[in-house]
Image 1: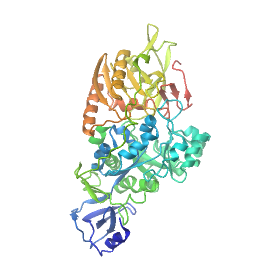
Image 2: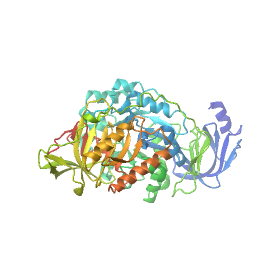
Image 3: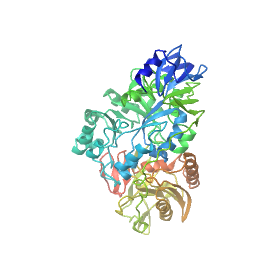
Image 4: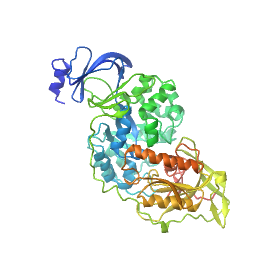
Length: 570
């Protein structure tokens, strides 16, 4: 936008390209609702108030005009679709910007994976900011497809859509001052450094904050969130498919600290995006729990923009980008019109107009599953009477560290579905090492059969859990034959599958088709006995060795609090 022309429109000396009239503007700076017209020149807001003329005028008829929503932390790959398809799901619901951490695809394809996400999101009605992934791999205790050093990450520093360093999950390394971790923080010290510190408290949290890390989205209790707020951190309240923390954390939000809080979705599957929504869903949840609607909108707009230094967006004011959402009821936030850069891009929950179709280089993110079934061994010799068990916590990604008696048959430790005790395996699929981590999990609820996938945070090896070895092998074989994806099996029969050929993480199909295939998978898991909303999402986090308490990687069972391996038999 030419500045001289913008000022001409702002003064009222030239017509605006678009005037939105008779609206009630949600002013996130003051917390007020103001009756005002909004004049737009190109992609920028020129002015607010009466008396503007435009080449086009839209009468809002008293509806509310809000800033476009901004997701503070999301992994687009978890939607299992490419950025253009993700945009088609969230923009019609009012989200016009996201800050993503592409560490899922980065753990598969390294820098090439991050550059793929940048290319695949170029020019969309959704502005995709891409933080530089700080922990690839998350730790040395899981085998990833790539390693990113501080020098690698420095090559992304000056990209205009890279606002900072993504979640520093290696909080033990940060606290202890490991040189490789500190080098990454130093490389982005002049930008934003996001955090990830579940359960961290006291002097260790002091050290983490002193390192320059300023946010966290892993809080699960009010006490944890309050401690972090008191130390100056920004707290993102998360409502994901697998981790539902928003309701539990809302009591921490007060008029005194709300501007230090934001909303994020982190990881949401297609059925939740299309059925419940995106940030609009979080706003509705928060308001239903008693949060002031304008405060909720601030937490999904201005607060995020200010933390990430996105000075051109997050509010409705002269000079800001014209990312705007029209709603009729702030207590039931549902986007009716969505504007991106001054252009109408969605109406009544559906995309409108021609959207760009990026053509990224996919060579580095295809054919990423390197697995030989002949090398996969799932048998566990019985070396004792009791085993450590990963205990699923409903609607959370933290787990319990259990010790349970193990069923034995023919000298082997086996699953016991009657006690909801399933066998679990993580099989390395990037480098052909043949690594297979074996363990047990309680809480998935399968009575028979198995489920498997190449979505296994954050190393994204093959993860499988089941009631018997034959079903587990069938599910793993299906995933490998698809070149990545999700599968449910019973015996030698594959019940349902979802191909994810891009990095083993994303489909190349429309999100509606992915949702249909995912619905078939979830129906299959219910037939197998699982009562969970989405057991695939739950299972994917059982391999993430930076979230307490007990997790499994291809290298073995990890006690996250001790940050070390532990034997399976107790």
